[in-house]
Image (cartoon, rainbow, N blue to C red):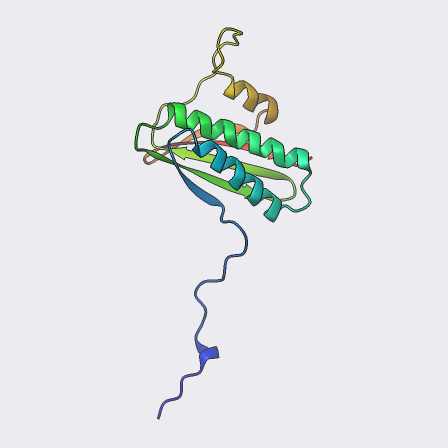
Length: 147
């Protein structure tokens, strides 16, 4: 008779603790709220010593990137993906979408209520954001330094 020992069977997956680093979203306006909630929860869990200012700055950056992706990087029925990574020095936000068209800054204007996303990004993440192509689209990334 063969006896099987439970402890001899290796575990292939460790149990995940806390929120995952990736969230898939529909390319629609209400997804911005889901992104804000997800980012706040992720950062607070994975960087518990983060200042409230840092958390809210990351939330604002993520919301701007998601909103831009919804407006300019998706078509009806498309989805987008937000990926996060944080440590005690910075939090990185990436938003992936299926459209290759890259964001470009628009001239400042008091007549438009849109077109300020990249200006906000420059102010919050000076020199710490960019765009990269991926096989099916692009991703826009930004890093918020810990305060």
